[in-house]
Image (tube, rainbow, N blue to C red; front, top):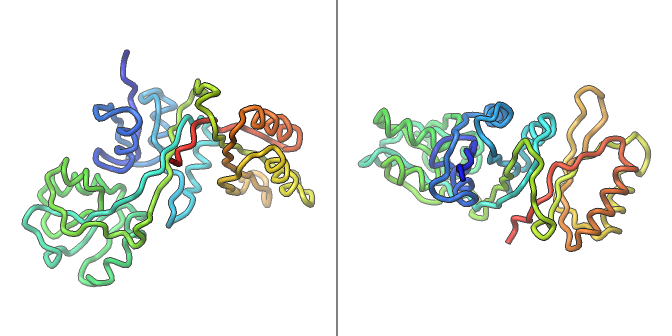
Length: 276
């Protein structure tokens, strides 16, 4: 059986790579994408069959554009993983922190490590497209005075030296990733205990509260709610919710009710809860 090609945002050695490896094995075939838009395009043009996409972080919050990408391109969520994020400062072997003039990384990684660099005001923080991509570039071009913030896996892959471990501000720092694809997943009922839903509501008092009451009455555990403006309808919003459940029949019941109540309704995916 041909192994699927998995699109990831970023390069080999990134956290997206780690999630892909956790799901599909160490020898997973990767398609590296420097943006989430490129990742989605690779799914739509079938150069990759599945994608790994970060969707929220415990420090930085929801990655709102990715909700819009999943919705606008009718992608399906088939799985999820919660990954504890460990940021490490790395550079060419033999370099010390005093030698580093600038550190380059993804804006999210820089944000999550901002407190660490207050101790080193001589280091300039530079936004870049990806954590592991910077590590790869440092190794390829033998860049002295430049460091990357990346997973330790990137240092192992590209032969860099870790100057400082665990530089993230909050040690309990986790990111939720989802597996996305263009086709509806074939997850069996016994594999499903979580769903991602999207709905729009008319401007009526109590309309959102009514939906939330239905979720509660049908024994759904609401784990996430996120609103996004509807671009073509000013001051109107779509709501994205994640729910977990113990009984699939309860889920079927809530879907049937919300389809009647909501102005627009879509199931983005049903899958196994990634929280252990």
